[in-house]
Image (cartoon, rainbow, N blue to C red; front, side, top):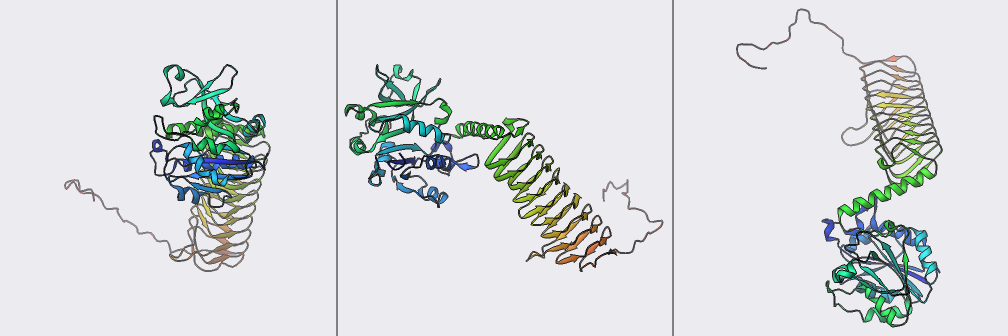
Length: 462
């Protein structure tokens, strides 16, 4: 089947109702363009060749999928789905069957397509349909007494009786390649849109004696398309529910499935727990026993066993080793590694740094471009001053160092093992191992000094 099948994805439309400068097929769903979802499904079917018909924003669409192995077809004028497929004809030589998909129908599963292909004979036209309580806007399926499809009537062209039909065309078709060229060449524009409708090939196939077999989707949501932002939002929730259910099937515990968003590839170990209003994006790997608090964002991260991410923490492009505790209200930026059983507390930001095993930065600190050893204590309000206005410099802190609160370490600087830095120090030179290093101005008190006061008679506030 893989060697005889070509897939054509129609992705040329502008999507005016999206009210966006972005082509409709590039609108995001679950962190990926609509067309990206369709491509992933199409590739799983393993066609002989993949074709994508583009029109509005063609260069933008192609650039978004620059690495894709596909044949790109340009539809310069948007004259309908029949015209779009007709422009792909020259590249379909050698195919026995042609499967037509749509770049704005992102929820279709590969298993569903496999069943569609298996149940449609090679010499028949297969048509994917669905049942809808409110079929407005969809083409209606008109059947004969034997259940075969007689024709598809577009909503704008349907009579009052035809509009009451609840079985609708979802657009996805499986066509025998040999007669397809002939059918497409005789399509007419005698319809409300003045376009070449691909659906008109149904009547042409019937006239040529080909069976037209409907394939009714068990889950009509799979065939749902996107025409406006409201529909996109509905599909987003369907997609998210599907993704969360997949993770739950692998053992993930979720406090509220409706308040977890997945925008990437997520792998979870056993006994993980996620509180509401969290986002997992990019490549996310959770070990066993990971707990993620409310309102957290994890993007492109690797989280070890028994890590606890406390509420409202952002972790991006980082690795967190086993037993670490992060947050609440912490920000872990790209290039960071947090060691085994290390602690990063509230309002601490760590960027491009390594915090060693058992080390702690519990309050109100910034650690940037730093190599911090094990069992180091970073006091509240500590800052590594890593940027001189032109270049970044590194701070190196060896094992067992104690940094007092409100200290500034001006990079490049090295702190030796076991050293103690007194609170309120500004460190501009390397610190030797052991002992105490501090830099403070002498403290003095001015007795009998009085704070300036406002003169009540003038009304001045100073």
